[in-house]
Image (cartoon, rainbow, N blue to C red):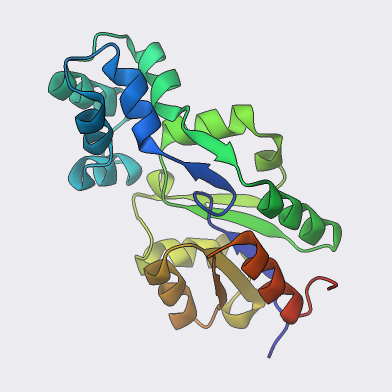
Length: 204
């Protein structure tokens, strides 16, 4: 098998964990909607897809949540409560650091939104250590749509098996494999490390 030259990381559930129920509980303290219902509303598919494909600005997303939930806080408060749902997956952050030290270019490739990225960039230093960022809301396209994978190839200058792609979603991995990328389905940090070692990219 051809040796990968570029390594592409999904963000959520690969480098950081997250739970929108946390935001639901925090926002519900200042809203009319119960915490459980509000947490579910935040990941309501049409709404979050519109936001994460850049069809809604952060202000417009806030206004829709506010109208539906009766949330009383301003935009600044909403932003801080909505986005404070992430925790680092330390073994994967360490894995990324090791790959960087071995000279591999690395990229973030994520279905995400502006408020989440602003929070992660400010909170987690590791986020600054990538060569590029392909974020759904900036390109009005979401994985597994082929157009966003084309952006990865254009930014990285890599194609096919030159790319190793890590993601926790089977459908996203399948779309990468269809382009000839080498892929690893993230099930645990231990399994991912073992898979990368098997490819000869890290020492056992």
